[in-house]
Image (cartoon, rainbow, N blue to C red; front, side, top):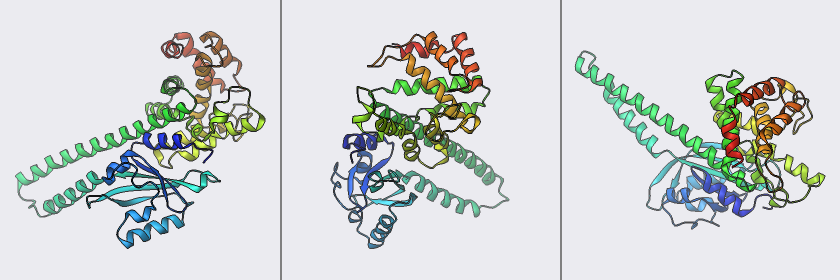
Length: 362
């Protein structure tokens, strides 16, 4: 896989906050991360090179795996189980999707597994409790009070579980973003600054608190598509050819493909695809202009340029904040949304960006 070096695949799989494996069209397991091996209770890498169906003993399970392989190009998600070495069937949410729509990425599939054992036990416990509750007498006040107290505890558990899932998603976002930035010899500090800049600008423009938060954590993944760009292009020290520039541009659409179809990642997908679109319609990949560009992507377009200018790189020193801000002003109405430029300069003149700029410049 020239477009996705083995070491990058391994780093990506290990960065995911769930069990994960890479599989080819034949159903051969090419790589599996440590979380998956722990779920299987098997030695590290012992399933590498095996056909996925062969780790299952039940013929019905094998049949389901073969049916899934036959529909290789379709993204799928649903409940299934993993056969642990100690005989347990570990219930999981199994998701699978090809890495891309065209070869060579279309010949490989990423399969992720989220352990839902606790959820299943809680569901079984809840079902049992509900059965018990159904048999309680409505005339017994003490039992009614106990039921009310139980429901309150259950609601607290649900809220706690919801927050755990959200925290896990946020951890996965940051690890995935850091993995993508590492391909470009950068660090996670850049994506954290982009998050902060985006939140400040969104708040200045009057977006709601929920929108500000969503724009911020989604902005972290703006360059996740760089993981599929060959090192020979991404790390090339000299000028890029026209063909190489087109390869670099493809990180926008690649980023959109990499991200899950779940609603949680909807804004991140929009940003990944459209954060190089220009207000005047001269950007890529779709040549969108003005308000056809998603709002979050318009903000990331601006702050990404500012952070790139004020950060040192191997090929340039860091620009002064004032010079970088002047570039933003000059891009008003061409590269950037005019109202976003106004809001950004208001933040800049008030010194609201100084702390992040200081971090960028060391």
